[in-house]
Length: 298
Image (cartoon, rainbow, N blue to C red; front, side):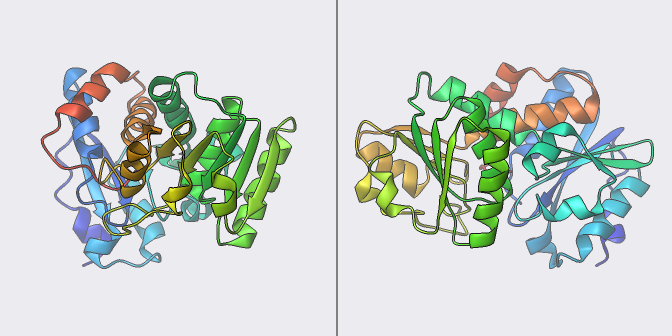
């Protein structure tokens, strides 16, 4: 089935938006955006474009953007694994995306495609609300991809003193480390291939990898290294309690699930799509009240 044919039938909504990614069929993004639309008197339709379920390859990404733009979508959210791939098919990046080097929101406006990033502010707000007064002197982060770039910027923006980036892809982690060092010269940035030895000495640990999703079970490191004085954050929200968070809680750690980032990045995207300000507290309540199961962090 072609991208164009798959999208026919979504033309009834007055404001069309959607989510592009893999393994996203249980995402709460449609519920969050559509419920906020109802609350604000908007007829908003949010469609999922799951490349895995549709049997699409990465080559369909530019065709999907073309089709969405052609039939009048206001924009698209972008999630794993396309947050960096999509940049090649955009006309411009907003400062939020240019700084991070990753896009999770594309706005179609005046015939152009503008990439934005609401993951940074989404994760930062989640940390402020869910881990108040968390110590940030030394943080270990697993993952240096599109999501990891956003969480790293958020952590350093919140005042993290030292950030240790862990990723098996040497080029990717070195590139992100160099970018962060330039943007935050007062911070200490280190990139390593194996972060296990650094976990015990950290104030907190962030999982910004897909590990922990329903389709990627497990933990990104051996959680036996965790101690009760530490905090642990995950950007995965399907399941809401990942194995990592469950292990961390059992060891007495403060934990932060991926739901906060999911909600607050969605609120930022809603602002961009509609030109209106989403009610953050209402969207948190909407997420909690959703009758559907959550999905991989979007």
